[in-house]
Length: 80
Image 1: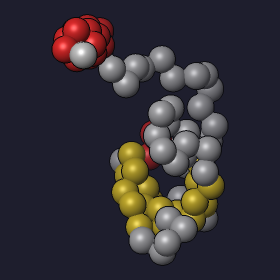
Image 2: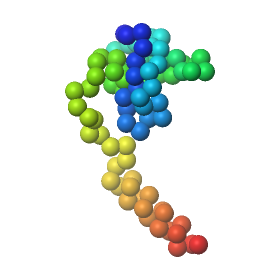
Image 3: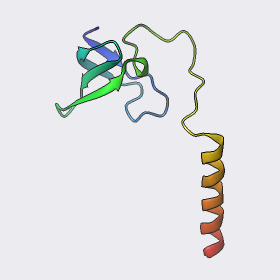
């Protein structure tokens, strides 16, 4: 495990931040945050194994989840 890693997961609050890696396993990396606490991250969410060869294509939301969100926002808009 490298001494520090960059969070590469899209939409993660720590995306782009370089953090100290205090432990690295096959699937998870434990990083130290600025306040001294630690956080476990999936290894694939970091550059621990080198930079990703391409931009990830996975989406944070499913199509059905987005439809539900639009319905909810529409219903809230009609109440006002």
